[in-house]
Image (cartoon, rainbow, N blue to C red; front, side, top):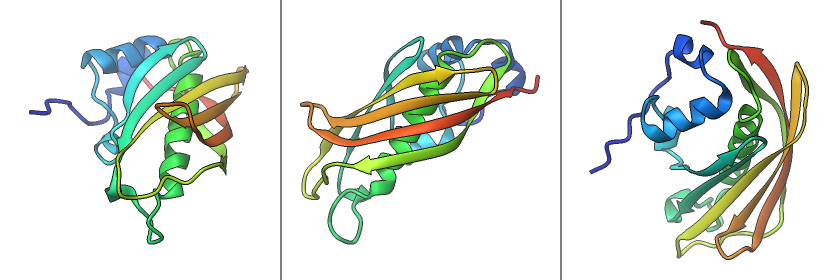
Length: 159
């Protein structure tokens, strides 16, 4: 039975946590996972200041009409990992919003089997108002699927 809670965390609670504290609270179940996680089930595999690793398994429910995993899944996964990597560097009262994401697709994922994926987001530079990050999506055995770069606006979280 899946007891994972999904929803939007209380902004006042978020404002009291650093990015790393917020991610740990999500892992511990003290704050809900984002509702989008019901559609694309990412698992926070590991996170440290400036770097975050997600894992997911995709199957034929994510195929496009051509019979390969839809590129939008890679874009969403990479945008998520890069944004959360930025979050790991933020102090209390700060959040982020993606402003730009660029993805280069390297290899297609064909239908007919499950694909176990690892998505890594790494901070490239962080400033007071903007941060940039890079990302990679690989199969669990290391085959490169896609790379990305992105930018985030650093925002104040209302309390």
